[in-house]
Length: 379
Image: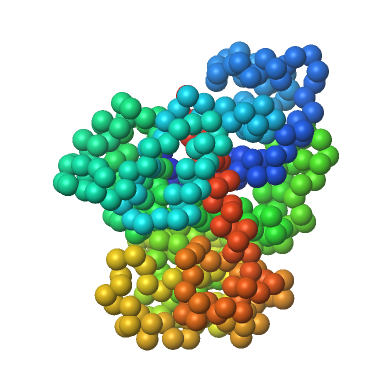
């Protein structure tokens, strides 16, 4: 059973596949496939993963693993939302949510499914029921479970006892869906590694020119994350180390990412070529970077220490001065909610370099990409 718990469980190619599906859904590149006209594409619709479908994929000179993604890009899938047709998805929200809830709820419905949202004390989990019991029960009633919770261990226990795919909607440790939405935004801005362009070209060689030429010319990413070494920083460490990116993380002393996450990233970087640097200077991290990212200084559950954190994070606000040190074409991202005047100035988040609203919208498309990919993998 494949779950979506943290990015470190995925290969680069698998994450590329999810990004590909998400871009396909967003831009409705439905007229893109230019498959031959002898009924092969029509026949593919009716086939589950099998030797027969692989045989047809070979006839088209396609990687059999990509057949589902080819189908995802066709109009009958996007328009009719068959990916989750006749399927039910449970969303467990143990933390308040806006973007996670809306993007998943809307995404499930756009893919043809139905959704049950369980919040706070709505469930027996809130009254002390063991999470493994909840996992076993929900697995018999729904086809997928999404959870937004505190401890990563709760998510992993849910997945361990679930017989349906489980998706991490956020934990204190990781926020992988958000960081994939960030990466999708980078791709739209022409900021990605050259091997992704080659991967895209290989996967779209049977498509029309509009689809093949969708990507803008590549600009190598140099990502600066400024602020708390939290779940966003952790997930960016995962992503950068898998994709081979340059990532500079700047935090006040005492707020660094967890060492085990840094160690994993640096070990992975030995193979991927990623350049991972942990700093205590926002200015040094931002210098000539083409992506600048921040997050709230006070995450949910940290409200009691708010005033101390505000004092400790002085000098880490992403304002016009800090952005002026970045590359001239740099973009700014924030996963939201944003607290203006603290981690970001109003001028930056509302400025021309901000891609925050595209980033927020991309949560919807990435959630759909994740769900579609998991359905394909677990057939």
